[in-house]
Amino acid sequence: MEDRSSIYPTQHIGATIMVVMMEVDPEDEEVFNRWYDEEHLLERLEIPGYISARRFKLEEGNGMLNYLCIWELEDPSPLQSEMYQEQRARITELHQRANEVIKQRARGVYRQIFPAEGAFEDHSGFHPELVGE
Image (cartoon, rainbow, N blue to C red; front, side, top):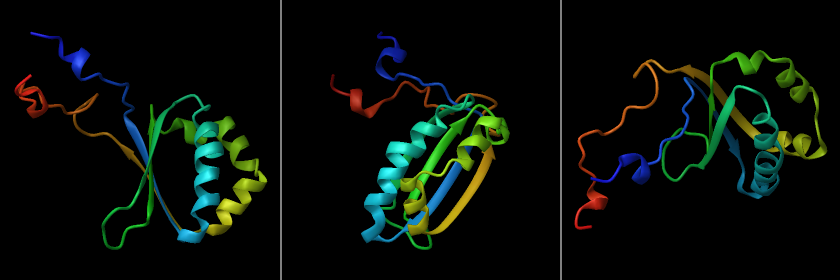
């Protein structure tokens, strides 16, 4: 039997996530997305303790903000770091423009409670996409 790790690669998973939701009008999405993708993500991921970030745009839902970013962190400490504070104090022109178009935002920092580490995964051995191979 083939090693599962070659079929389903694993990635490092932080024990803390930060969820950021923002609302931006369609006519302002270009400047907002350019700032987030070209400046903000790159800048924050330079900070030790940040692991990864994934961005999403709302497809369906009620009462939800239209942009979501999930940041994985080792723990909450990067948010109190000197590097984080220095980055927050540096405001580029693009950052200023993007922040002017954000109509609403919500942010939460969450600590993983289950499983104790890693991610809950299917270990039953059944993977529908492999049936018939």
